[in-house]
Image 1 (cartoon, rainbow, N blue to C red):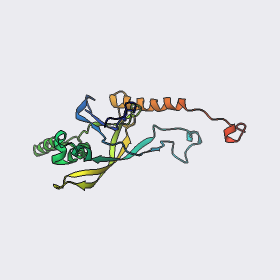
Image 2 (cartoon, rainbow, N blue to C red):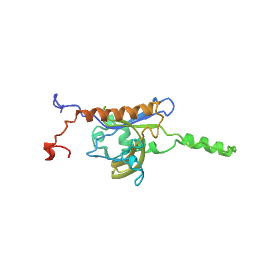
Image 3 (cartoon, rainbow, N blue to C red):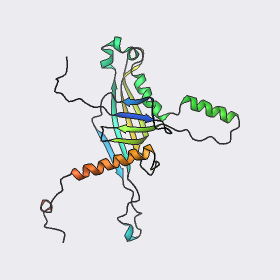
Length: 220
């Protein structure tokens, strides 16, 4: 049955992976959440002057707050299994491909591990820590923000006869990468600044209150 023509298109949230050097989108680097989470939890830890310091420091901010996101995403193979001819991978593997696409966000590539092992065998004294892609959390055009995944858990809830998972809940925790983490002048830094500027633009649209709403006539 076709959807009502006047129904709004429901956008999906997701993660986009960029090459950390060129900032180009990686091959298979767009991961779209199958279903949008019902809730998105955000927290902001303020960076202020140390408590107990000089009184002149009481109102100073030392940088952007540390902002974190938490969400639970549902992945379900039911819709794909209803049309098996169009979804042979789901028939054969269940939701393993979708889970693997998310899991590889927190793994260095096997090629990198093998190359580092070869370098170690050759007596290389120092091996640089492995670079991960720059991850962008996309939650509408108004919220595109560089993040680092900090928490990741998967609860597999149903399986097919071959024990392939066909339904799962993925819990993601992410920390926003601000200009305290990224170079101010590169793509990552500019994406964060654009994210903060978007917040400031929204704040200007907020209808200001009045003293009477607070039950006072002014500041004594």
